[in-house]
Image (cartoon, rainbow, N blue to C red; front, top):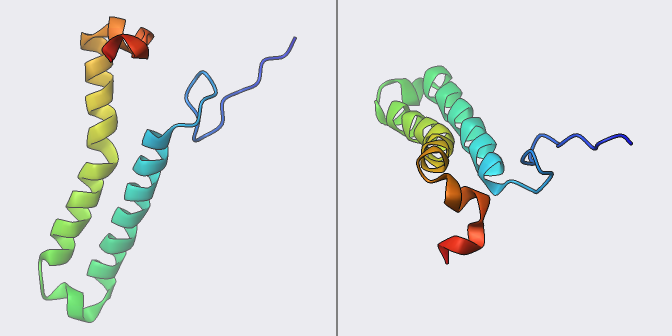
Amino acid sequence: MSQRRAGFLEDHQGNASSMRLMSITALGASVAFGLISVLHPAARSEANGLYITMAFLLAAFAPKALQKFAEAKFPQLSANPEAAE
């Protein structure tokens, strides 16, 4: 029997992962704002583009890292999500 491989926006069990979708969306927004803040002449004079870019980068990577730390600290909750309720 061949096993189905998980897709890019799925976890290792094959379930849709909204966390991965949110991370890839925030990363794309970070790249877009970074390019705009570097390439657009009016945006170069202000530091707001840098702050927005850093906020999107933080939004892209911090939740997934926090989830990994929480799963390592409390493995019984990640194995049985109904136990948390």
